[in-house]
Length: 156
Length: 257
Image 1 (tube, each protein chain N blue to C red):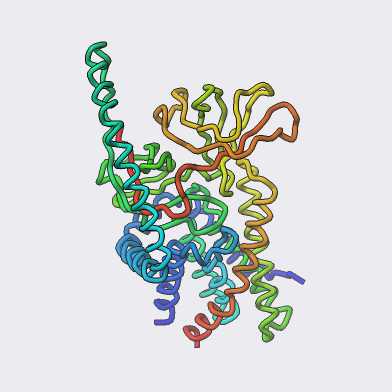
Image 2 (image 1 turned 180 degrees about the horizontal axis):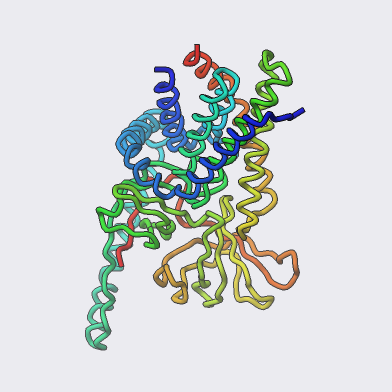
């Protein structure tokens, strides 16, 4: 039953992301809701469930992007595994530690996607690269508490 | 810190292989996934449209009044132009001009936008069943919107002109100066490879060139807002403000060749 709810949450978050209202965009940036969900799964569920639904969240994101590479599917799987390893080494009971992890993962994920875009020959002014890297990561982190609460409730 | 037991390593390799396989066959997941998402995406889009209509009621009222004034003025202008148009048609007949074949258009509604900030695309509610194929051009009455990059059975993905993956061979309408227009993910497009003595100035209108393989000639792209020199110092570039409000697209037209 829980797994069905996780799947439903992925569909709802993907739909929300696809229909994110313009007036909620911050400097033309929208938050990465699926990334927050992937991180929160590692904290509130067992590793296998987190990895499976993390990869599914990445796949849901890639399906609606205009690229042929499944960068998010691969990255989300790797992030799930790395967060699991880190969460065994450090205490994640404090909220700010979880938010710091979301910020770090969002920065890394955006950096890799941006770098891949630039490496494939796309022209992107440095200002826009930095805007996407920093603003998206900060906006994603700002919304993390909401998604964390949702995941906690489903996982409980 | 990251000491891995043999079993975990094998599991990790298995999962990694599965993920890689999924990523290789990503395109086969796209059609069924988009089919599942289409009904509620259309519904959520409709709700979003109605809710924003209520939230921005006052702003819309002011806008409607201003547009009504514009319509009245344009109607008056149109009356004068109708005469010229009729004269033009008569002259065309006289010179036996070849009539351009009219474009076949399919109207579509935008039901979703890109999930991240590293690309600029929209999802429309028409797909292969409506004759839409990859590579087709998407416009709206104000100008060029983009091109189809993927078409599923009932939905299609449109890569907008402000996506960095877009490269459109274009010309300046006034001087016929050619250049390549790229998206930057920002509010403006960038027209590159302009020589030092390029005939271009702020306010010039940029249209698609006939040399473009995908786009028909003469589609409006936007207006030049700034001109600068590229970092290498060899060429100049122009910043082009798109004619279409790409952030607020609701309906588009797909050109069926």
